[in-house]
Length: 229
Ligand SMILES: Nc1nc2c(ncn2[C@@H]2O[C@H](COP(=O)(O)OP(=O)(O)OP(=O)(O)O)[C@@H](O)[C@H]2O)c(=O)[nH]1
Ligand SMILES: [Mg+2]
Image 1: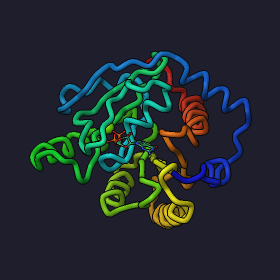
Image 2: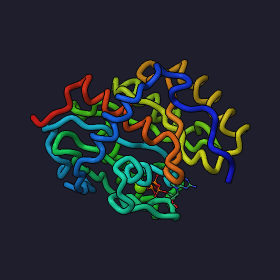
Image 3: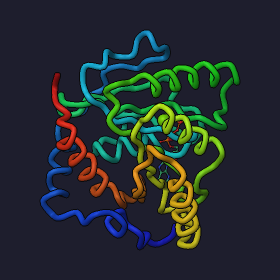
Image 4: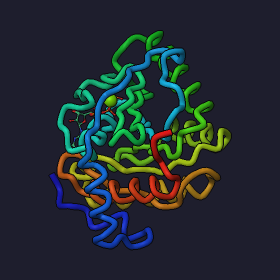
């Protein structure tokens, strides 16, 4: 395990003050409950509230980050085996907005047919969700963006879905790996129109970057007025 990374979201984005961190903490201290698991587009909840979603390759740590943000270890199921999340899971935070945990793309250890089926569901969801305010695209801090991440970015640009990259598992990344991943991601972001220019840097294991991310989401919620419909 390496030291806590020195690159933090605040080093690159507008400074977060203590009040913003507290607002984020308070928001995520509210109740968060599972409301739906959709394996087909027909049973996705109506777009009756705003939402934010978590996407990325299998095993990158999407479900773990949802748990870290909400401070609940077992809200979203996680696994060492890629392909744990096989449906789109909706969690309602503070009765206000949904956190959406998506199945991963990439090297899931399940049948090709199954992967193809859920990829289709995820793509349809991403292209046609008017209430999706921000997609967090998770990328492993040891590896940086891979071809499937680029493909997703291009698709999101076309669909005009606002998204932001979150580097994950920084506790496992050596400082030079993290630096390389940040540089490669920044270079990639320059070519994508719908991408947020700043990168969030997190570890669900150590909690690094998690309170900053809560604060960012809280300010996004204020900005878009994420409220009950
Ligand atoms: N060291 C470390 N391990 C992590 C971190 N986040 C997740 N993991 C581990 O990575 C594995 C995959 O985590 P998940 O959260 O299930 O990943 P996922 O992206 O939801 O995976 P799918 O549902 O298969 O797409 C689990 O063994 C987690 O414990 C982290 O920040 N640091
Ligand atoms: Mg998962």
